[in-house]
Image 1 (tube, one colour):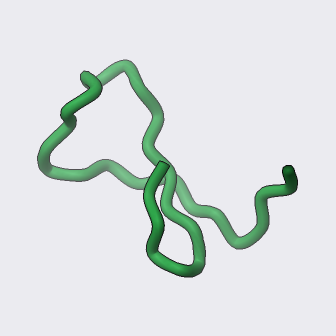
Image 2 (cartoon, one colour):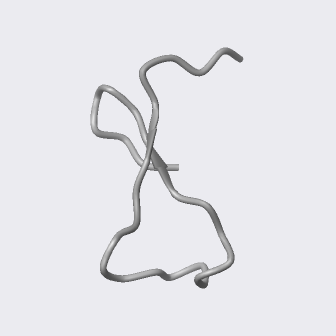
Length: 31
């Protein structure tokens, strides 16, 4: 699995905790 055009972001609501890194891809899918 290759990640492309993926930017790290910090959502206002962090359901997984603040220690988890959040990413969002070019299609707007967060994972």
